[in-house]
Image 1 (cartoon, rainbow, N blue to C red):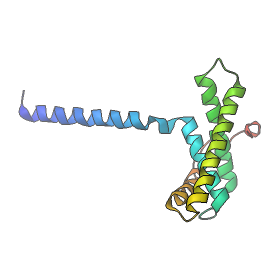
Image 2: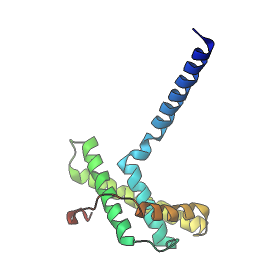
Image 3: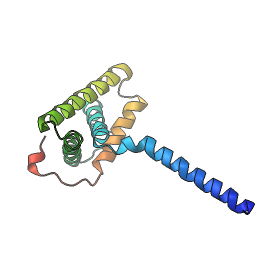
Image 4: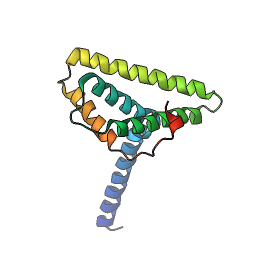
Length: 140
């Protein structure tokens, strides 16, 4: 086999292998529970420290409700033998833990810290998501 072809194949296989490893390590970022956790942290940071700039809070709240409902639904899909109330309770616990974590950050570091700046910036970014508009019964 030609050396150039062999080198190309090795590089191509190495690249695809690398991409597979990176994708598998970051797959959790697509999980509904993780996404919802990002919403909880951002909302609590803005609640504690205020937004960086004025954004449409109603749009954020609509996205928040959608992400919350999706997290509950994902819990039901993962554990179909458990009642929906169990998944709802797990999401409520996740909300409480996320809020507590951000409150501790504010107490320890203050609102001027770069980590809280990042959470407040995430609030702006999450507001701009084009998530489906949640029906009224998704008030959760």
